[in-house]
Image (cartoon, rainbow, N blue to C red):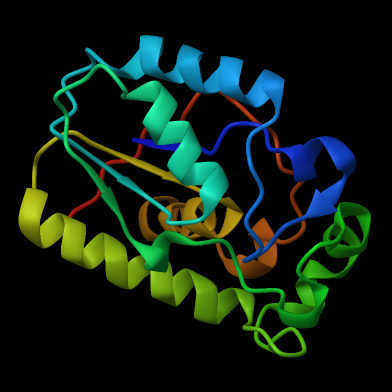
Length: 174
């Protein structure tokens, strides 16, 4: 399963955090609690999350009273926008396709980001193959999962609007 981090302060301000740390907004903390209500007793044997503050805070709130182990992995981070970390979100949505294979200045490309995430998924599958796990991350995390399980290309994903929902179900293995 996959869930995005809950709503961050940067999300509410229209900022694309990238590798910047942004805390959850008040609404985001409430959404993280709702995530816990949805997933805490859902048969999950482990939670893996990005180490960026908004993802960490999401799992800390969601699984605060749970015995499910939580592991942080930097490879589940969002795409590194380099010099554009913290720029207006509107700028990113209109230019994502330019950075599928070309890195953002001082950062990485979407392909590099999704390959990084895919390496983390390989390691998770090696350890938890067949088990029900939850991954909490970002757009790059979801895109890597979409490519791996749904066969969508980065070119296709980069043109789609992001539509938040209460989790995605992916079945993947090594």
